[in-house]
Every structure is written in structure tokens, then in C-alpha cells.
Image (tube, rainbow, N blue to C red; front, side, top):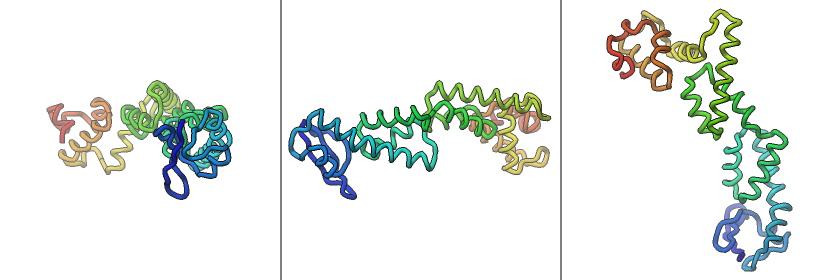
Length: 225
């Protein structure tokens, strides 16, 4: 494979193999494993580049990132690829991180869902978690478990058996200054519409805000400002 270099920022170069982007590194990195620009780069030389330069550097980079915040597998993959590491290096780095449980999407998803479950609708939480890079099955299981734990926990308190979505609706209305019987009809309709767009069910909104006929006699108008 013919190796070419394109000058980049901060002394790093983009490495091209047969015209395709392979990675980003320094010229001295290539020289350290016996690779020269304009020459053929064999599998053995690329293996050395990965094992002696790119993989150790990607591990350090990922640990530095994880020291600041938690990442899903997909988030870390995107980050390392954007830093210029090739597919092989990224996969080896993720295997290393997962083996040490520095990246664990299942436990991360469970903690994330437990934190957010009383603050938003299950539908909104589902989308939040997909956007963070969790797998769909992982998201579904984490939300179900968080809902189950929430109901069990509430069973020991005064609001026995209450769903987390009812608490989330109350929290939202509290922040908006809502007080039943003291809010103009138009504002109540807008608050109900906002909650519906956030994924809460009509029945839960109705239960928390009061009887439906206090707001409107038309179900469609109830959710449309």
C-alpha cells in the first residue's frame, strides 16, 4: 500500500494509504516503525504502528476523556475516530476499556434511566438515550427496570404505586408555577399541550391537572394550543 502524507494542524499529518485516509499521526511516529512517505507500507509495519504508537496513545486519550465524564461505547467510538485513529485501533481500545469496565453501557444505561425517569416521559427518555448512543434493546430494558424500581420505592412512601410519569408531570407544572384552579384556561391548555408533546399520556396529564372538562370539552383542543 502506497503511503502519502498531508500536512495537518499542530504538526500532525493525515496518513493516506493508496489514496484512502488511514489515520492521523506525526512524521516521527512513522519513522519510528520504519515507514517512509512515498514508499509501500506493508502489513507488518502498519501492525507495529498500531501496537507501538496508535493503540497506547488511544488508550491514554480515552482514559483522559473518561476521567472527565462517562461515555457510551458509541460516543467513545465517535470521539476516537474524530481524533484520527483507524478502525483497528478504535476497536482494540474499546475492547480494552470494556474489559476493565471503564465503558459499560448496561450499567450506564440503568443509572441514566434511574436518574431521568421521574423527570421526563418514558418516550422522551427513550429518545434521549438513543441520542447518547445506547442500543435500543439496552434502552428498553433500562427504562423498564427504572420504572419498576421507582414504583417499588414509592410503595414505601405516601404515594404508593404512583408511576414516575405522574411525578414528572407534577415537577414540570411546579416549575411552571401551575396551581389548579388558579390558572387561566389558555395557559392550562398550553401547559397540557407542552406535556403531550413531551410524550406524556392524555390520561396522566388529565389526572394531574384536573378533570378534562375543567379545561375544554374537546379532546383535540386539549393538546393543541
